[in-house]
Length: 511
Image (tube, rainbow, N blue to C red; front, side):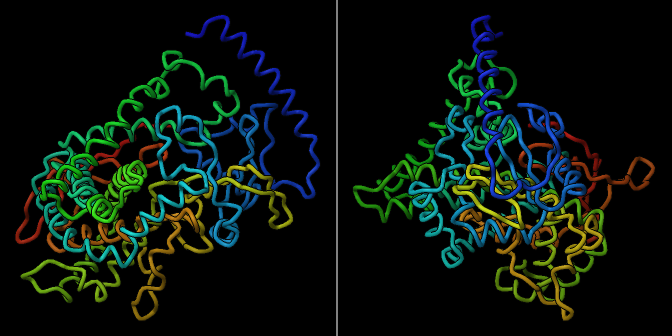
């Protein structure tokens, strides 16, 4: 509970800030700001947001104000983009202006200052991305191909053995594969202590790092000086994240160093770095890159695979076409491999559609402008938070007719070939902040999907009377969302069903 002194200080800050904001609004811009909803003094549009699913609020605003919207939350200017063409024009073609990140005070407060995603545009970010590019670019990712298939095959076995929620085998697949590539460790999946601590860190961080939620700390800087016991909810857990971060940064990295010294290290991102590093190599940067490589792929990849399984249940015609394509290309005595990929364009189209249909990060990652800019007759001030509403992009009927339907043929030409390469997919972000691990991500997802549908048939659950249980897609809230389900595995003839409850529900991670 706040003391009277703290409350008095807060009241003084609020009064001073309101005066400052009113004065700042007298600034005359050369052009009008983009249109947007009228807000309250100081609070702006904060009370008009669906704080659990702000992307839906932004879509609703877009119906009134257009594809580019101005909003203000606690004095912070925000631009929301609901159009892929506008996002490409600003973030890609004008990347020199739009490649920064907004300052999110909770990032440093939680001990996450090493976080590549939220680094400001500058030399440290360039060092991070240089390492990512060296080890995860398209050409380098070829050296990891032999790792994908064994992990994907293990995922199939784990799905067959699953008796409850499929979250665990899916997370085990993504965690063990990324751990192998990053640190060369053989992970125990969701039972691995490193995974459990990383997941704990992620669960807290996802609630702390959204621009909407962090706005209060930007508006009231004095809050960053308060001890943790003054806060409630996720904010009260910032002390825990400050404990976890150094553990996760140092322990797996130091283990690889020890293995390098005694000659037992396996091939990995960290081992490759250490083998090529000189005495002046920045190990702290490599620790951050390695941990972010691990963290960055766990939740988003698992979310995408959940969406894929749900799509297979809801669209059996799509599943049947994938089965037919695989059976035509791959002989019955082997599993699909990367060599078969050019002959499986429909499976690639399914991957593209999974990424579009329910994007795992609905609002992407926020950008910030480093200079004033103008677009479409509107003024965008320096320091504005710019958010690409990926949910709106995925539901743009002009580009994706009947957008709520799962339809992989959107990505195919008339003769069945892939129209566009996945690396241009909006789900991976834009320009200088595009996901550096996108080659690895798409390879891991493709191998998992290919292995699953080479062996399994995904079907509805049945109740005790054998009646099909209908499925209603429902997703978690938060910065990263995923479908929730519980299933059990059962065999049928020479194929298999992922059978069970298929009970969908919302788990409120929230903002």
